[in-house]
Length: 396
Image (cartoon, rainbow, N blue to C red; front, side, top):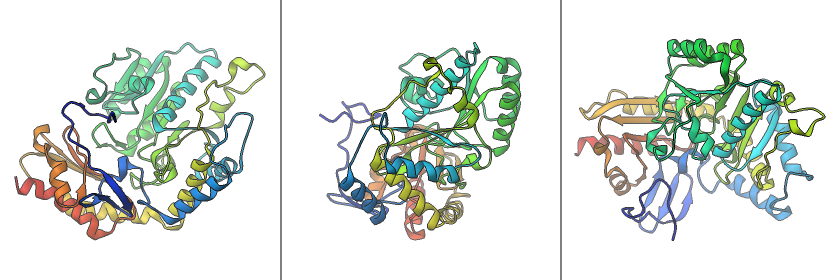
């Protein structure tokens, strides 16, 4: 029996069965659907991209995997070389893993051990209020979303900060000397409710992390590769550690990257084995994943995706901002993300089936109907999604 995610299996409706996919479309046994959420936000190039397909096949024809311990290969070397010129600042040290959650775990472990390696006894972690960084235990500890993690105990050494500068300054003033790191989803909090905040908050966070010698971590698993309208938010404010996933491989294979600056890397560099970072996912630096990442970055650059994302944002704002219904709390748009937050969760019950009937795959949760569309979407396809969202309120 398949055990599905985030679902009560006793009451779960039978999931739609996909038999094919092409571009922005999923084909089920009876319906062609626009995928409005890019299969959990990762399929930025859409499905069955011929260049990604070919890159994957070429690597598989050579070899599909070898461990990255005592061995290396051309694909991971080429990707690392590309990342040196592609990522901002001095984020030039790359640790690969197999999923976004694990990439964040790696970042947090690095921050903890960096702290220990230099003889510090700091204990606290700063995170955002309504944070979500994954479902493994350490990522749950720094998260603050009861909808996902209510069954597990809270970590008393994690302090959750609202996204306003006054609370940020108060928290650092009170606890900054005891803080190991500050981890954030920059500008856009995804699973925590698509909350959007201003870049001034991150600039102040960088300033305070420098003042109190706190490691700043950007979890750009969801926000990276253009989702906020920026290539990376790290282009605007530089963290000490950056985590990428989801779109890293164009959505084809799970893979993640934890990139650090020289300061963090040198905290592990020395003659003593005890200083070494003891972590090693089986599929880290997988050759197929690295080949896909290289090709995905090439397409992103060549096809000027930032302009495509600006157009998506422009259309979404035109179609959604100003739309009103007494059941709606707020409508938010940023880059390639748009969201209608309702006042009561009951309001969106049944929206998935409603959207399916109109040829759109959607997966609302809690109080949010949202879109995180593939960047290759046309205006007509995008308007079909926004029209479906508005029709839900007009026809009920």
